[in-house]
Image 1 (cartoon, rainbow, N blue to C red):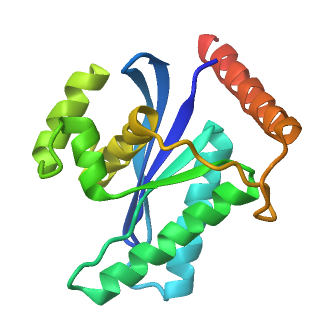
Image 2 (tube, rainbow, N blue to C red):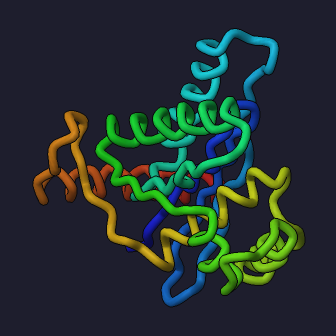
Length: 196
């Protein structure tokens, strides 16, 4: 059974999402990369709603086993930090409501996992994504590449996520097996429809 991770690069204007499947060892396959956008001119609540709807649709469509979110870190621009933190909370909530385990990784953890250096720049990360995933070009815009890198970090570095149910309590193994079976059935349907 392969492991599927949805990586989220939280942002209020552009929220990057990347979906990767583990293929064994340090090999992985890119399933999807893109961004969920909100309009800068819209009121905050409408922007958050647009991001929430996009994240909800991605989780329902791709059925990840784990959701990995970039951990919010201190920046000089407080409004940027607030928007990033709000979107992170939405991603965590949407995953928790579906019983999907979540994990968080700092930007330096992501850089180190993908490039071997915690000080790598975006161009170095994108170059490594092309090599690691056998792509013709890095996913665009950069937020999508960042989300793919976050997903790969979870595949390769862990830590093991804590499985929570919709109430925030730890899921029983039976619940975890049921949720995993449901995701596998969704993937089987994906494979059969892609063959036709």
